Image 1 (cartoon, rainbow, N blue to C red):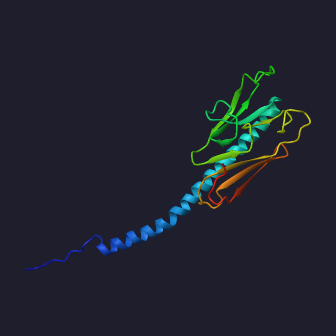
Image 2 (image 1 turned 90 degrees about the vertical axis):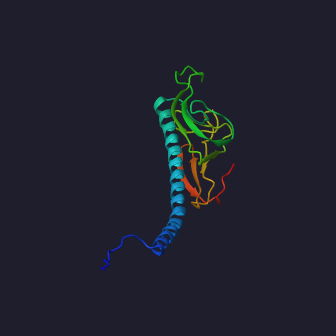
Length: 188
């Protein structure tokens, strides 16, 4: 009787276990880095959207020779006043027909934040208005000071360590952004 030896194909149990162990170690190293990258990208994207909206409001105020407002909004069509967390914002021309009453608003832009990103602002009425000269001021008077304020966009996590992006408006129009390490906590 002759026995033929055929080449066997496949894996042994030991080879399979070693492969799965190596894959698990590599995955364990890659996932935290990936989460950190995703969160950093979300924060940067939200900060860029806010800066773009502020610039749009300023340019439209100059172009239209009228007041243009960026305000907190829960429904992406009307302004919601007050302090607290912003779910999104709109850029609006409060008096689009220029009759002196703000009862005919025109929404120019609306932004809804991702649920993981939180936006907080110290603006007590939840709005910032640019006047036709292109500057945001503290009050409606002609000789009031330029507005300086900050917006904090945050994700409550330690991945990345710099879990907050601060968008700062200074001198009524100058904008800058800065990543901040807030120890995984978002301000309320």
